[in-house]
Image (cartoon, rainbow, N blue to C red; front, side):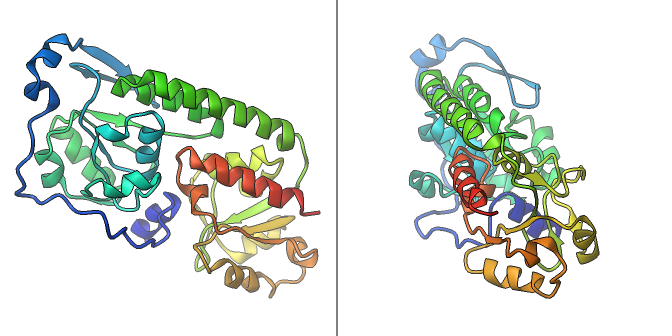
Length: 315
């Protein structure tokens, strides 16, 4: 259950791995790191200290040229920061943008092939602190591989997170341009929707058992940007299980089924057994099958814009 929920909350709704991807053979010959292959570049590199999204500091001999991304959201962020060509391996379900599908895999967020990871000799590994296998991440850390923690708690964190990745990879010009674009879109989103009052929302991300998101989860902030309030915003767990009785007690104005493709209608039909619920009584049962909403990369903003439009039409 823990593995399934971890994948779920990272936007990995049992999507089939793209056929074009390939795992890295454990015995494959690994090219030498960029600095070793190019002495002139190595000589020109200047040691640097980078601060990640959690405030931790990482010392590197220069901008990272060989990056392993251990979450799909981080992979998307790296491409947006102009560092896609520096990603030498990633995890399953990293399919945004399409170019990411060609990157070799070293497992998924919950199960990394550490032997293959180490054999690649990356300069740094990007991890998502709130997901994955904590014991495995600790094991990787003990091997001495620098770990950069990429973390988004709010949509407003997107631009600065992008800028930090640009500094990490030495692609600040590209990262800055995309960060400014995101800032403009966020400002427009807040002007358009954030001041509204759409009521309370149950954001359902799984059905049996019922899982939702707590107030510290990025999707909860997305609801706020739409002028709505997560009915379970007081919960600190990013992905809590709740029972029907708890939902009935809080009586949300709207129920959004943020479901895998083809599943939302069935999830919402289950709620029709409780006609006293305000969301059921007024027909405020919203299917939302957009996997970008839980990808935790720049495309979550596209999904949030789409959700805001849907919620704006719910009266």
